[in-house]
Length: 411
Image 1: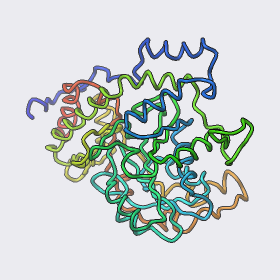
Image 2: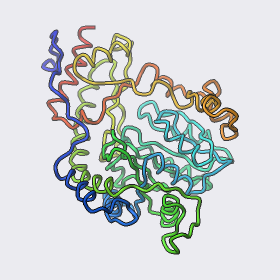
Image 3: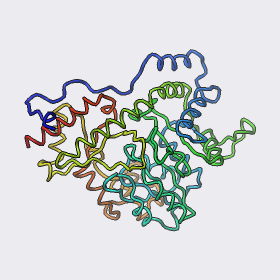
């Protein structure tokens, strides 16, 4: 590694990193063609349907139902499996707030369970301890693109037959685990996001993948104002909303999919290279990759930082790493179980007098819920690098390694 440890006053990295999103003229033409056609809504067009089929085929799933966001995808999927008022849904304490917000929007209460220390994914043992007679579903998040331990979650669902498993695959586009992809891993459904930062993006959007025809039919009704796939136009069967994707978004996503397999391959390879190189640095612990995961899409490159072994507080390390030209962040500052929303204080401030019956003692209030692994990750340990860095060449990954080694050597 001596060649990667140059100690100079100048920043290690001055060249720009790849921009995101990646756009070419074919993407522009795909959207322009829809605009010129005058058929902008998916009810009358074909682009969204073509994208749904292509994305489902990429993952080997029978059905794809496109919606207007990843949050909507989760809410619709949870509702489709029967989650509603009086129910509890177990979610990880370390994830974006939308995972739990979707549970609230479905009328149920999120219950937080801690994460595994070496993956930051929901801990199956912690999830099982949180199960009660009110638990209706569990939502494992494939955090950063690392597939949660679906074998153990499937076993949980078999032991507790009233449970549904819904995968939050917002970070896991194109992932492959034990020969299968999200949406075909034995869960009721998998939900993806196409928000601006995601590995496949149209600015906003989401999709539900499922192999269950009945769930797919219910999801299609819920996202299309409660209509049935057959029946009168103004005939409504379920209390659905208008959660449809536009034809412009469908066309852009279909065009962007052209490069997704190669981008996923590159992120996977560069992430594995960084794991190998950074594991040699004292105080830097790359996240564990499950050997069953053949393709890791690396929506985030994550590692655990040990301030005592490395020799400086995380905040100082991050300040210096950014100064060396490697953009990095600590990620979440608090866990979901510590958010004001889940103590009820957020709703009290924003909507005075609103009933808080859906927030139970088990749901919120940081003092009442203990998630020590999450709290450590937020306070001192987690370091995030965004996915666009991994679209560079392997020699650019060496700049990340040089920067970290330079900081470590200089103390």
